[in-house]
Amino acid sequence: MRALLKVIAWIVGVFVAVVIAAAVLIPIFVNPNDYKPQIEALVKAKTGRQLTLHGDIELSVFPWLGLRLGPTLLSNPPGFPGAPFAKVASGELRVKLLPLLDKRVELGTVVLDGLVLNLERNRNGRTNWAGFGRPGVETRPTSTESARGGGVPPVEAPPIAALAIGGVRVLDATLRWDDRRSGARVEVRNLNLTTGAIRPGRSFHV
Image 1 (tube, rainbow, N blue to C red):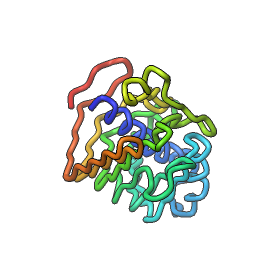
Image 2 (spheres, one colour):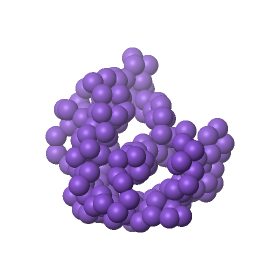
Image 3 (cartoon, rainbow, N blue to C red):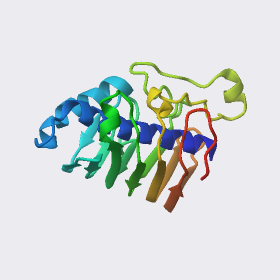
Image 4 (cartoon, helix red, strand yellow):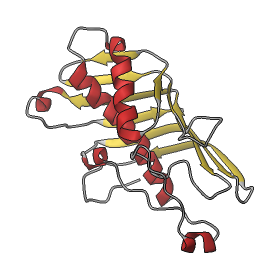
């Protein structure tokens, strides 16, 4: 459960990065969809993963900068063909507009609807979330982990996780686990997750 929450935190971090990028790149009263290539390039630079924004970006302003995304995909790293690492049917987040003028980011609740998370371990023991956020870096299990049959390697929080977030709501999620080394496959559907406010260095309710 702890490892799953860390992976979901990465997904939320990517989504928040999209919103912040939009806040910086998109002037008010323009079509936010014109800036999709810049947003996708920024996520690629920060995570090493390809973000694909299939749906329209809907923008609202004052007193919150609100963004709603349509179908969105986040790719796997090289060596993991097939289904994408994660996809959402829609996502929504609001950022208070006035604090941005003071270079402060105050976020509302992040909503991810229809999240599908495909977690994999290949035959060499490498997971598709290892090295997340560090382009070009691959993390392999230690000999101790291998002796235990492969533990879940620690996942460091991305810089975006240091931001205060009003909460996270994950609706109607599907979690898939495919272990190519052991042959184990698990799929869980209709998952829902709601957290309280998330503050740096503090625990939060789930």
